[in-house]
Amino acid sequence: MRHVISKFSFALIAAFVGAVITTSGAHAQAAKGASGLPLPRFVSLKAKSVNLRIGPSVDYAVAFRYLRPGVPVEIIQEYDNWRRIRDADGTEGWVNQALLSGDRTAVTAPWMRGKGEGVFVNLRREPQSTAAIVARMEPGVVIRVGECNGDWCHIETQGVDGWIVQSEIWGAYPGEAFK
Image (cartoon, rainbow, N blue to C red; front, side, top):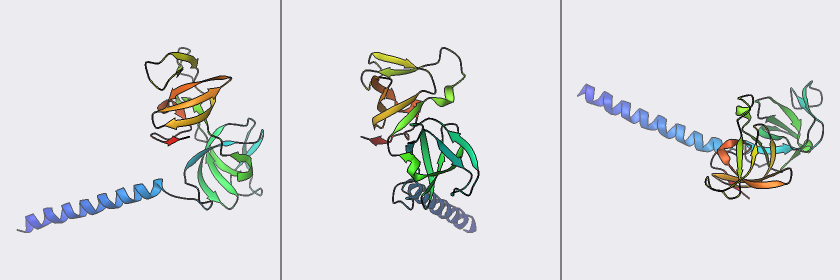
């Protein structure tokens, strides 16, 4: 009998732990920052020159400087008017919110940079793997994202637009849909 109770207790504890993990995972995805907007979320750099600081104030040292507007970044934390961001390379730091834009941009397959000259990401006419290829992009190209349906994103870059597989960009979460 003692053995049966132990198995039952173990099963009950396992079910409780599973429920807690599921609830905390769902909560983490629905987290909101002080701004009332979801965390994490993707945005882009608005200014031509953006200082990435080691803390949330101009009193903190500059760790890095971005020199190109439109670079996609992920906001992972908020403090007052400061946003802790992460870029496609994993670099993290603090930026004033005034230097960020809600415009969605992305980077094509940054994890494939340096993998050889024959590595490309296909831009297609329609959101289908059998659709005609409009362009072939190297990994690391910054693109403007108009919408994503959870599997494909409609993008534009250098006057060319089309659809790209959502899993081949950094700048939209897996399964995320938006217009």
